[in-house]
Length: 417
Length: 151
Image (cartoon, rainbow over all chains, first blue to last red; front, side, top):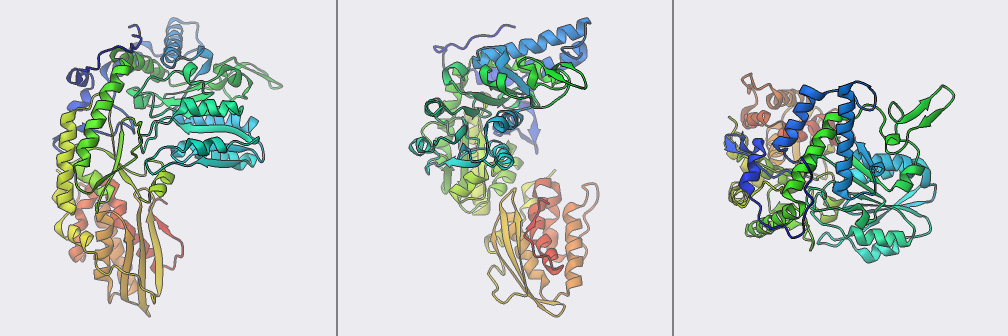
C-alpha cells in the first residue's frame, strides 16, 4: 500500500458509515446498549488494517531487527525501517535520523528531559511550561529541575483556556533554556499557536519541545513548517497500537545529546574500557523495540493518509460544532475550555452532578466518556473544579451518537436534579 | 446485568441531595480529612467521643453521589456505637462493597447501609463508597494524616 499525500482541496465529505466498518469494535454492546465511544482522547479504536498488520507480523514475520543475517530478520528490519520513513513523511521531518521510536509521548518527553535537559539546563536556569500541560509534560521537567537546581515558569491562560502570549513573551530571560508546550490541550481542546510560540522562543535562542499527543490525529503537522526542536506523540491516540510513540528531534540537537538508555542496538562497539555509541536515531533506541507496534504504525499512517488528514479535520470540526451547540442546550451545562481554535475535545460540568456520576450513568447507556482531572490537575485548580466530563471525538463518531448523548444527559439531570 | 437502579437506589439519591449531619463540628473530639485525588471526592469528618462511645458525627465536603451519600448514611448509624462496634461495622461495610461477584453479598447487621451492595459491580466506584468509612477508621485509630484512597 502506498501513502496518499493529503490534498488541501479534498472534499469535506467523509462517508462515516463506511469508515465505521473499518472499526469492528464499534459494533460491540456495553451494558446491553450499542457502544458509543467518546473516549478517543484517552485512546482511539483501531481499524482492521492496523490489527491485521500486527496479527500478520506475529503469524508470519516475527523476528528481531538489526541483528540476524537470516531472511525473517532482514524482512522485519526492512518493515520496521519503512515505518520510520513513513513517520518521517507523515510529519515532514528532514530525515529518518530525526525520528526516534519510543514507547509513547511520555517516554519521548522524559528522554529529552534526561538527555538534552541534563546536559543543557543548569543550576539557576529556567524552563517555561504552560498552565494547560498534561502531567507528563510537567513532571519530567520537575524531576530535571530538582536534579539540576533549575526553576519552572508557567505561561498563564485566560478563562477561555487560551494562553496569554504577551505574558509568554515577557518570560524569557538570559537563563531560559527550554520551552515545553502542549499542541492541543487534552482537557480543554485548545489548539495552541505553536508556530508563533516557536518563533518567539527562537528569537531568544531557546529551543521548544511540543507535546503533540492530542494533535497528530486531528490535523496535519509539519516539522519543517513548525520549526520546533522536539515533537512528541503516540501511535495509539491516532488509531495505531499502544506502546509506540515518536520523538522527533532536530538532527543537530540529537547529534550532541548523550544517550538515554544503554543497551543493545544503541552501540557501535563495546569493550569493558569504552563504548562507542551508534549513529542517529539508534543511539536513543536501546534494546529490542516494539517491532509489531512499529509495523502496525506504518499501516496506521497509510490508513489515515488514505482518508486524508484535511478531510478528517474538516469532518471532526463540523461534528464538534454540532456537539457543542447540542450540549449547550442542556440547562445547567457549562463547557470548560472555549478557545477560538479547538480540536475534538469538549469538557463540561453539569450543575449539581459530579462528573463521576455522569460517567457511570452514561456508561450504563453504552456511552464511554472520560471523567476526572484528565491528568491536568493544575487546569482543574485554575477553573476551581475537581473534575470534568470529557467527550473527545474521532473520525468514526457521528451526529446520531451526539443525539443519544444529549438525550442521556437530560436523563442524568432528571435523576440527580 | 448491572443497571442504574441497582447502583443509584432512591436512598442514595436522597442522601446525595439532602445529606444528613452535613456541617462542621467545632467541638469535635476527632476530625480528619478524606481525599480521593482521582475523582476529587473530598470530605472532612468530625467525631465526638464520650470515653469509648461515639456521641455525635458530622461531615462536610464535596464529591460524587456515591461518596456523599455513603458519608451521610454513615453518620446516621454511628451515634451511640462504641469504637470497636464502629470498626466492626467498617469491616462489614468494606466486605459488602468489595465482595466477589460470584457470591451473594452479606448484608447482615448492615441495615440501611445494604443499599450500597450494588457498588461492587462498579470497581471504579468502590473507593467513592469507601472514602468516608476509611476516614472514620483512621480517625478512630488515631491517624492524623489526610486519608487518601490512592495509597
